[in-house]
Length: 626
Image (cartoon, rainbow, N blue to C red; front, side):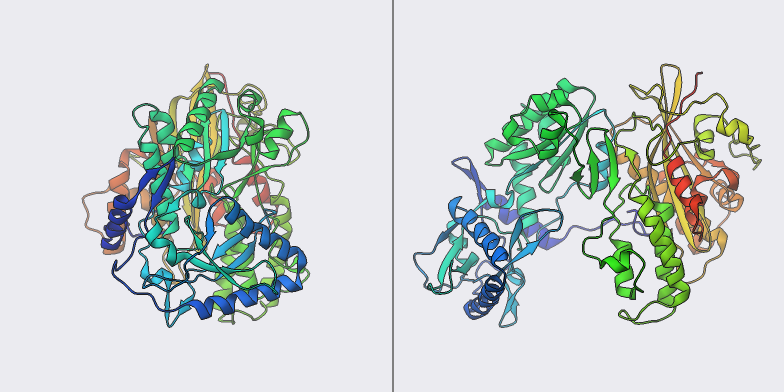
């Protein structure tokens, strides 16, 4: 919904997804504490071509790599032994070919963020022009919203995280489909090649993510009446095998962990690698199921961050950071010593994972550079021109600063002075918290901006003092702006607690302006639409109750369009106004001067410390006595 502009996405139900779900529903049974399912076939009477030769040739390639790299061979053999020892695979006693026989090539994938090798089956490998995936239905996407999981992870003070061990492998495949999951293996080249059958769900089939999510959710639904909160958390707070959640107190968190462990165990799953920012919660969890970061935290030792769905969580300080190590990018490129190609430049820019958009004022500069490079029509493997390379080196230098940026994991936690720099109040936060009072729309009268001394001092204190404990009178404030280069929307919470006003950064969304030129008012309208969509998503994905919403724009033209429903506009404007009307009310829109509009920061093509300073300031939690 947030990724498209001007198009409201309402997907129709896919008939193949309906068939896939029906097949898995019919075949899924709980046998001796383990779920057993069948594969969802496009044609349940199909006959598969002979795939042995291709699988054998691929296996010879794997053996060649293993002979050249003893360490790789050792880790590869360990992964195969892991399958056999845990009954995830077994040697085939009958190797006769049947209409449903398929031999799967396999290979190893090294994840630079994890020490172990991932053993992957190549179900996309073709034999006689067909792959196993061609015969299987992919099934619907049952994953919960990643953005929703992450924002709910920030709602409450006590946070927990865990993951399911060998999630796919814990789901068994019915006997009649196991011949379709054959593979070849021998520990040493001098031995004869043997045939094995996978008895569990493989990593590499197009239907595996759907089946895994379906089984996990169906197992949880069995406990919807006895443990409703835990069942809901398993369905809505798990992203594949990772679980993230937050709770108002330690007692609730402790009970939730126990219930989730029990429900998963009843379905044959094991959830472990538990981490929390609360030692009380960690003490309630068996030590053997704790993650390494949690163990260090309990012992009071210095601990590194925990990778959490693309971000890095530092439980000791309860902060979130960003992985900007770029392990797969050449070091000379990251250091700015080597001129990158267009392909490498794209890889670096798109490797920055920032689901909350906290780094948007920085990342949008890279995307603007990439768009300018696209206009130059150079090839993917051509070096970028000097004019862009000079900007690239400046951007890379800022990248090193961004690796030190930290944001509070919980909205309730204030930001104080830290090694990332002193925090001061932002103009936008002044408006949100009440220092400035732009007039509601009727006549478009700009608010009088607060003086510098009022904005920076006033009755506020830097936020390392008192923090909030609850959310009262919660408001959502969304700022939007656009230029000929980019458009941006950024959202904040504003709430009261014990007579104090608090402000917290939620998320932002930025887009480069279209290649086809648009007028600035139309770009500002696109930004307003982006703000409306962002607000709608934020409210839908949070559990917080929002009392009021405010939308801030510095475009008097856009505000006039939104408030004037008597005129028939041209198609471009009318379509966007129609969607804005669906999710917002004209009474919620306000004017904000450009100098006080925080969204303006992410629409500039600038390369200076303003971006870094603004990104630090924009997340300040501030308070004042009423």
